[in-house]
Image 1 (cartoon, rainbow, N blue to C red):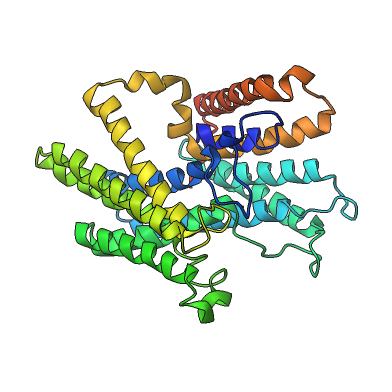
Image 2 (cartoon, rainbow, N blue to C red):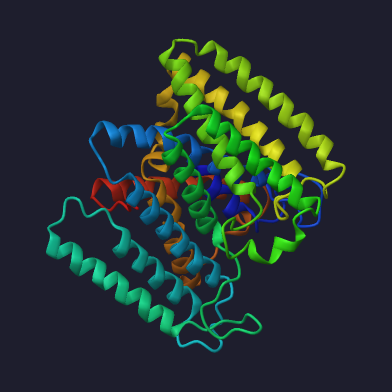
Length: 375
């Protein structure tokens, strides 16, 4: 989450090393920014078995309901975020920063953690949030050709996460965490992505954005990889055979890297923008290696305290993601600017790093006063 905020902020800063940013849409390459979203989806998958196990231990019998409500919330917000990109303030009644701020406040009121609130306050605040979202929907105007109102263009980052979570969590739930099932579906999504890029399923292409896949299998592949690794970790940890994890993960990473560079020659190169198979395979391999590094750092060397400065990014992740959507509109409305030294080059890079820390710390401070989003 920390790096997601960072790469989003640094994208428009001139003069910083190009390897930090996304590569071009038609380029064959991989920047740091191109690896962050896959890693986030991988972590979503990692979290599912542990979260389910925790809820089962607490006697929670509403897992299925939680899967659907959480997925809907992510897809719902993602839909509005995608529409933010084409909001046309020239024909709308509200300036774009105002509209974005009010929509984000609506999300806060709708999805605030109300566990410590009395019921009437919860219903009052959620009702206000719903009314705010409805009002902003009514006022929305777009610059998208062929549309005048809220419309589908793509699912947005949160929407893609929501779809991946929905399908992968359901697979884990109905398979009761069987390791071979997680492996089978990981391979299924991975090879489906390869097949689609080779053109074998072109007759279904018009349905992908609207029906079951919400894309071409890439997002689900990352998430299923995370679920598989978490289940494997839990099993090996229980059997006190974690050393086997190192062998298995490194071997899989080597296979994925090699397969990724082979497929690269035949399927449009490495491209996040086009969800190419080589991008999926290589980024999954990177996530596996990164995961092993953190297992070593936290489980073996016990260095968890190293992450304390950005802990809210993990413990208050949803809030952390939405906080910049309040900052950016406020910054635009203020007409303030950064000194030139902080607007480009090394100064701009340092500014983006500091900004990422500040967003995470704000999420942490909000949590301390019980302002924490929960879906």
